[in-house]
Length: 121
Image 1 (cartoon, rainbow, N blue to C red):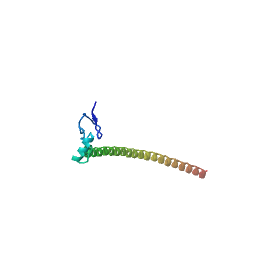
Image 2: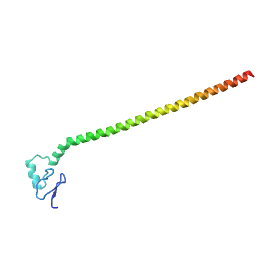
Image 3: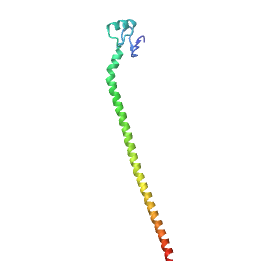
Image 4: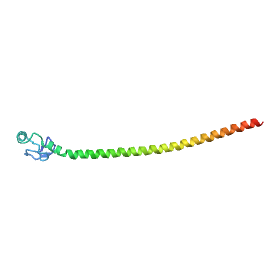
């Protein structure tokens, strides 16, 4: 291809250009020396990256909010499942308690019946 690859951003540039067409970084040693003398020492790619910082920060914030919504939905479903399981357990406990009370009542009646039978005989 015969072009130059920018060391800062990796973009391909035409042969003979002194600075990157994508980020503005000097490509030749001469351009780097003279470019730094006339411009601030901050490379072009750094300016671009700093310019994108608010956008990247907002994207990160949105992604974080989306993850948090997912976690909250998972937590809501877990709490609903736990409440359902607790209700089912209460129903089972009531059935066991009812069976135990009926069994106890039958036992007491049988004991009373035998006691009365032995007293009457």
